[in-house]
Image (cartoon, rainbow, N blue to C red):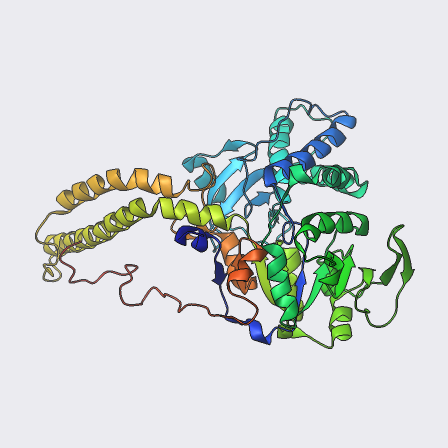
Length: 482
């Protein structure tokens, strides 16, 4: 693996994680242990939802899924029918109404006094890759609603609920996953390094769990497909996981006490109520995280949970149980790759911005000197005397002509409409802030743990603050050159 590939496959640490102190590791399945080809999966989910809407008489026959229209980490504004990208502070920097991107003036008018607060029901956060088909369809239907082409008196919030219901229907009747299980080669990206990663952990004494919202029949078929071919002879995926819990109904699994059932007949999927500990090797249905803790006599930071859903996997398990958390973000590979390819232009952009900061400081000083001379209330400071404000303004305008195309390109990395997953302009994105808050570590795939192993100390780096030496967030008044 090349040096660049190693970086793309890195484990990025928000809070130091001592793998030696972890006694059990729980895994989600979909988009975590098993990675789907995103465009294929989301196109299939989109098509199922579109057909459900067409059956209701909606004019959606000509709609086509476009995976470039949305990215994870955006927010739906159900009041305005908009898709939003916000900074970590909730400031909206990009928006689309339906499928149409909003210009700067309209963006300012609509959101100058509005902050994206994820606690408000007005906003729906796109936490997972499963959200992409939902958001793409919602945007297209907003266009049809505005054009008066949808039946009934709908608002944007009601429209979203209809889209959500159409997708839920596709999942609940099982037709969506049945298609995937029937043709896994089309939808699943196999990872030969997954099995040695899990076996390293297993033979290092870690107690492995599979906790998934998927049903038992689908789980056993997909895990057998993705895991069994890479195991040593005589083993199957069930030998790897001490505990298997299906239909977990996360995030409620982490927050509520729910009935637990044991899959008594694994072929027919027959269930019986279960009381007491989760026996090793059994398959269970439902239940809750507290039962897992009690059965394993483990709790809190002795357990690491690995999943792809920012809210349903890492937010709730962290905030409710204090489990350690790892978030799977497949997008990090393309994000890091895009940053590397832009590195030369990024350096030039930083140089130009630093030069602009110095010129702006001089211009501010020159304007203050002019004011003091004009009014006569104090002696000029003389810090901007080498050039007039007009001359400095012209120099700044010239630099802006160089900065603008570079800044536009930086804002379009990975996705032309929305830019990087983890950045919003010069700031962190709202999504990055949530990752920082709830995920102890994040990485692109489970098998990235193969390179660090089950005995590693994953250390967080020293944080850089605006007042640190070498930062350009503030300007030295005595600066003489860029």
